[in-house]
Length: 272
Image (cartoon, rainbow, N blue to C red; front, side, top):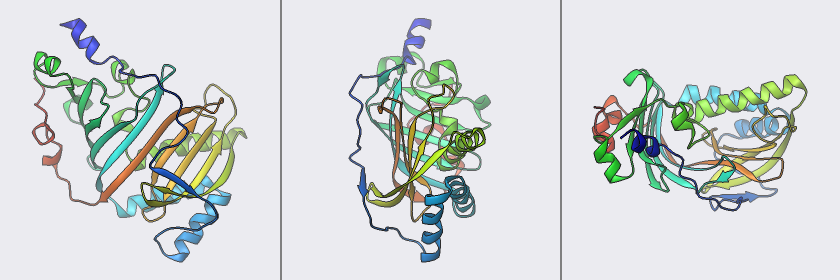
């Protein structure tokens, strides 16, 4: 039993070539895009060209003033232990307060194909449903695991309790501020792009080869209507992909309730 449970959360990675492009991201040169007031778009472009930290802070403030929850499809691809895994497609429900995440894998799940995390519930553990039917029956349907525990981090670079536009932007800001303070930050304007048919402006960040920096080159695609990072790509010092995260089909302020984050509402059984 113990061995099977250990196997349950082992990483499921497929070695592939480092993909340079995503079918959901298309760069557009020399043309301003977006749906927002001209004043907002002008400010966003100016900050994208001059001060990424100020722009990301502006995005956080905008998010806090406008959004409480959302649903989306989330694509992620990560290199773990030197292996670039397959792109995963995940349907997500998210609520800010209390911080709540429900994930359902549609393509290329790891060993768990459903994850539910509600901050303060189940001792701040996530509920995980094994994707293998035999193992699911063996453990009684679902198991509890620490979101940032050793087992969970064997199959992801970012735990479920760091998911979401606000926390991911704060994570980006932490690295930006650290690099600026150390005199290591190089930032550039990356022009405009389409991310899953949404208009975006692109920030490019370069960091030196120091072991405490997560990547050499990071591209942040800011949605020009919602002002959230709809795509973040990072590359190592050899130009190979480390991670790519894309949000598609966002629907904001859909009035998600406590019931939407119950196990039964997410094809899961309550913990035993």
